[in-house]
Structures are given as structure tokens and as C-alpha cells.
Image (cartoon, rainbow, N blue to C red; front, side, top):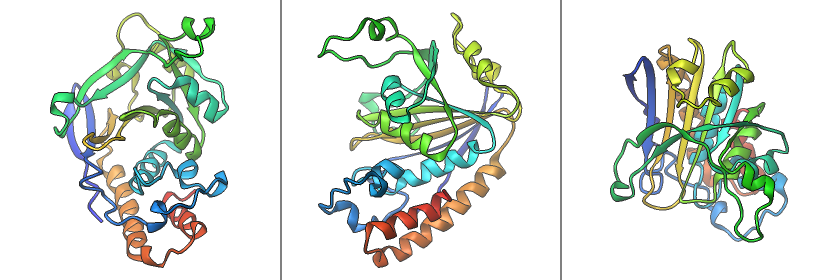
Length: 273
């Protein structure tokens, strides 16, 4: 079990905490449960680690760290998520409505320097959403293809749903807002302007913004970023220490896990849901 170490910087009036690494070569949870690599299909969604925790034999257990960390930061706030590119897939999985917005956040690793550590922070870029080639996209899909979607996040399972919607490419990206006083209308207004938005103009003192960029293919790094106007280092440390201790116990007990039900119970001990 490796430490969960964020690197802190201060840029443009924002405290930025980043955790970035290659989870294929250097996973945080260094030992995976053998059951993830067996042939059991787990067709029952109630027992499928992928549908419940975003865990499979590719991402393995590290994803429980990301999803739990994000939920701990968001659960006491008015929270919203933006699934980059896969807006309509998110609507289908979450079975909830969304609001159109013009902008979404973008972090990227340059293909020529894919082994670099810290990603390029492009800030807000014009929103865009996936539409089909075959069959022919509908008029509605073509009309709204240049808009992103803002979804309300009410539960841990909503975070997983947004992840599953975006897990189809070499990398996936989701952004989250946790608001203390403002509401959805504040975000819609700020993210629907013709002028490129600025995080410092959107966030209030007790708000947080989180970007989760996950490398799905080997060679693509993962980066979890947290932005805030106040220094929340102690809160982040408390959350990561709790997650680390729970994951360490899981890793130490991993050889005693024999069934999918036991595995699910172990994951629930970590995420607390």
C-alpha cells in the first residue's frame, strides 16, 4: 500500500492539490483481489464491482480511493458533476435530467510526452458531446453536440455513474463542483457565457472544484486535482489518512476474501456507503 500524497501549489489565488501517477506501473493499492481476474461474470448488477464501485480487472481497487475521496469532499455541499464528452451516456446511466452548459474543464497529457507527471491544465474549454455516426444522429443530437451537461450529484452512486459514462476511451475526465452557499443557477450562469470562465470567478471561499482524469490504457497517467480559494490541506490530509488506513487493512486481509459478497463488504468499509 503506497501513500496517498497530494502535491500542493498556489496559482492565481487558488490552492491546488494534485495526486498524479501511473496506476498500471505504480498502483496505490499494490495487491488486487484475485476474484477480479476470474471468469465469474457477475451479471447481477447488485454484485458487479464495476457497476457498484467502477472497479474491474483494468482499473482494479484504486478507483475506490478516487470515488471515496471525491464523495467525502462533496457530501456536505451542493454538488454537481460535468462528464466530459459523454453527457448523454451519463443521462442514461444516472436516469436524471441535466442542464446544458457551454464550457467544461480540461486537463490533458500530451501524447508525445505521455510519461510526464503533471498534466497540462487547459482550464475551461468549449463543451462538446459525443453523437453517433451510425445510426444517423438525430436533429436534437446534432443541435446540442457543442454543449456539455451539468448533473446534480446527490450520492456516491452518482459519482460512479458519471465514471461509468466516461470510461470508454483511453482517458476519461469528470469535473465536480461542491458549493457552500451558491446553487445550480450560479453555475449555469457562469458556465454559459460567451467569455471563457475563470475558476477564481466561480468559486466562493468554502467551495471546492475537483477534476478527475483517469488513464484507462497503459501509458496514460491518472490525475486527481482539487481547487479551492481556502487552504483545505488539513481536510484533505484527514480524508486521505482515513482512506489509507482502511485500504491498508483491506490489502492485509485480501487473501481471506473468498466471495464477491465478501469483496463488496470490504469496499463498503472503505467508501462508508
